[in-house]
Image (tube, rainbow, N blue to C red; front, side, top):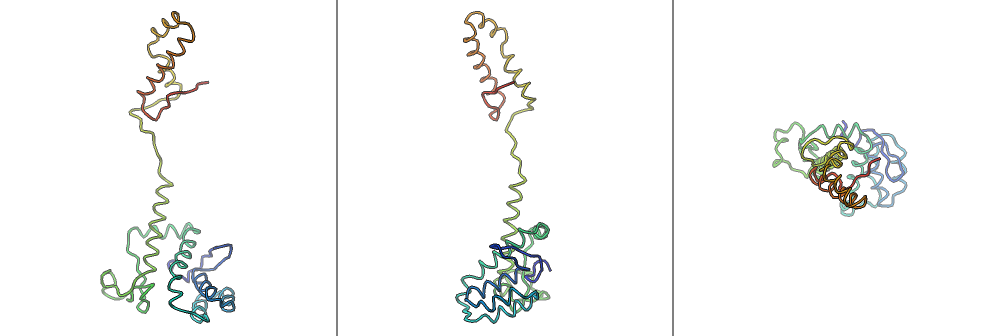
Length: 219
């Protein structure tokens, strides 16, 4: 089960490697309460159930103190799991807008306090537990979806109508009232012509749309 904390995928957090989110979560519990012996045992074992069993025996454990830490620890573990593995992120996103549920009849915090076979498991108002695991996964799914949408978005210029190559735009600039431009060149000299040409270019640019700069340098 991909969503299980026992699922072996390998994650890296703060320069340390963990075989699964269960190992990270239980090791952080042991470290938080200063039980370095249990911490080492958790880090050395490769059996997920043993990790959980060791975590339940952390010395000097205080439920109230851990209550203020455990959600942040699990959130970080899940974040690493699904962000560091593209296939797992895809699996999570493929759930669409489905409401994710931790169906555990004996867990009223991470789960909904109900079994998968319960006839009311699909009714959110009937859930007995907080379903914190499901909520964390749905929050992460929303973040990943927003990030992917932002990365894939392409911002196009707001231009009324087709625009050709820069050479074509430049040609339009140069052809703005060519007869008048020639006459002004003869009357006022090269400086006067350049001023009038720049003004004509700016007027032509304003007609092309706001995304085209008023000044272009052509080679």
